[in-house]
Image 1 (cartoon, one colour):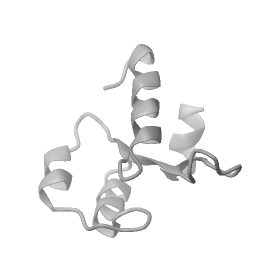
Image 2 (cartoon, rainbow, N blue to C red):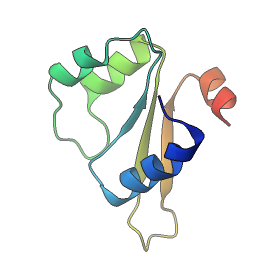
Image 3 (cartoon, rainbow, N blue to C red):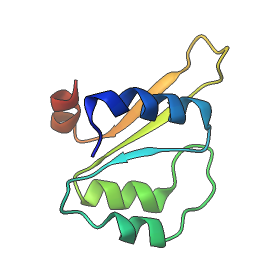
Image 4 (cartoon, one colour):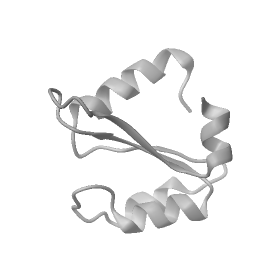
Length: 87
């Protein structure tokens, strides 16, 4: 669980680590199952991870673009209602 104070650190981490994701799942979800399933290298997001998060009604945050790219930012994948609650 991220507190409001740790959100800034988490966002900074995924912005600085191009191969990282931030996954948000319900407290009852088994994140260990996602971690132990093994992730494949991909240009964007591993399909297995995306499938697991979608089935468990979660969100994936991923940084896109390089630091000097005018279109850099973050992508959030998940149910629209969950994204609306977050915003």
